[in-house]
Length: 385
Figure 1 (cartoon, rainbow, N blue to C red):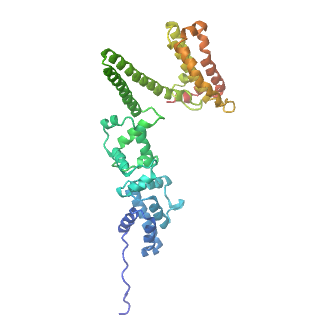
Figure 2: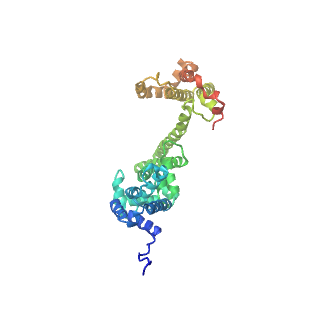
Figure 3: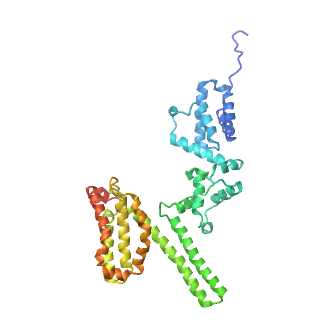
């Protein structure tokens, strides 16, 4: 019949169905097969439809973040010509999407062997499953106490697994537990988790020392000796804990005291005058307790802080070679002897103020080099948190 259109009606393109098929094929991990499947789709002879489908697929990837390897995401972006800088992507968001989907794909049970091959040192599949189960389990203090010796190992596994981005882990992983283990192993900060782990180990070392002393004395069948050994070994563990606490307190103090003058700090006047204040404290202790070892410990601490501050802030063009500090280990014995054996002789042979010349000289030298830009002259620095 003349005027009748005998062409078949146009087939409507199922955009949602196509996105689902593309994601399912990408989940298999075969980027070459995915590329061939996309190339074989006749609908994409239309550049307008290809552009619309590509943008819809990428938007769905951002929304759902399905598991797929990075190679498959790259194949999708290249096919739809969305892999270049002018495609309108946020580079950081695209990088996060790629990491998240890659990790989710690796964490699927079928890809455990590939994940083991990426991790270093390479674990067995059974070990990997056990470590993942630990991170997926709800946070419990009983588990924290049982694993108090291994926070660094757990944190290293998390960082290796996620390439330094623990936020990419799927939702089934317990965020509180992961944050706790990372904080406990972070040596750059003094965190609650780190202090708690140290306290648990401190208590365990003290109790273990006491029990070991009791066991040794019990073998000798001497109750009195058992008490002395238990007390002595327990005291060793307790002393080690006190040293650890002192180290925890020293680290932030040393960082704060040695910051450059152009960096705003809290309590800038105290930062500037800490060494003279310690020397004054030493004079007071020496006047009240002239035979106390503390009277010598205070200037030693002041001298160490002053030398550290001066060395770290010394003008680079005038800084002495670091080799001069190689003699420091040889000074440990004479210093210990001065503090604990010959303390009375030192106080008898020198005026106490002469002992304070070392920290004050180091502090004065640093003050001279920093005189042109002291932070206490800046109202902004003085009011900084």
